[in-house]
Length: 481
Image (cartoon, rainbow, N blue to C red; front, side):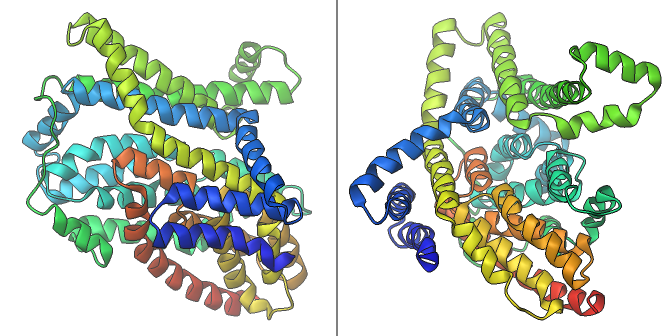
């Protein structure tokens, strides 16, 4: 049945592309996957699809991400309907900081690059900031989605002092390497896809040149567009909640990370553990707190705090009444329901495909008897295919890193090169996949139609992957004896 495990993800892709209905695509793929798991029984498959969707909420991480995506609608509604977004855009343009197309795009790309600790915070902050700037300069929302999507994950997988780096380290340190840390940090210069993608983003920012479906999307809005909405009021109605969200997310990452490290050390009190580390001057341990933090919990706490501060500020300054705030909050949450539904179904499908063994089958193809120098390129392609079909780069890493490390040891491949191929391939697959959670969140943050974002970003991802694949062949020739 191994080859049949490819049927559900391929069905999802075909339905999404040709019917342009991502809901139907995900539901059909989930039904097919569960039916295969239950021995080709369509009745049990339908029931299994329901149970698999309900099971999404058994994970605290998944529930927190879904709630975050709903609540982000309330924060966006507060900032937009209060006139804060329009005021912020006006202030940036009039001050000259975003007065030109290049400066506006640089502000967005720079924001996405600077917030490398948590990809969802990066996507949201850069997306909300970029919406009015891109509208004012006649740039498409698809272009905005591409810029934020192609900076957040690639930056996070390169500047790995974050949860991405901690996860990779956890996967590598179970093998018999002298220094797992050196392997993870050594993967950075070998991560060709991420480096090339970031280079293309900044090339686009500085030159303004786009191609393929992206050029057509830009042509539709050439000359500038204006969303119907309130007149500019006060810029702080936007920047203050955003600042609170970003800064508190980082603070909560540190706090939850310290809690994890205190528990590992057998210390009951996080405060006591922190006091001990400060007193002993163990600042390296304190720095590791960020990599041990709970990203999903932190951004949920942060968005809740940001909404609370935004609402209280608007009430205190009489920008909105209490009943109006409530109505705007629920309206904003309602605007997120369609995309959160897609995210829910995507998570359920990813879990179903893992149970079916789709990722294991794709990985086994790559692990066949191949010339040693081709293994880095094959690992990159396998990671891309697995991430594309399952919609999760982290799930891909969990499948392929345990294959890549023994292969590296057996064939004499530098382990950092093998790890980089898997990490980069996972991000590549995410960028191409209509069922990827990060791609979905990029669509939410930029306010663009999801499949349109996938379609316009695809040529850029394929171009970067083609170059990266060639470089992995060369790297294999140079490093594998």
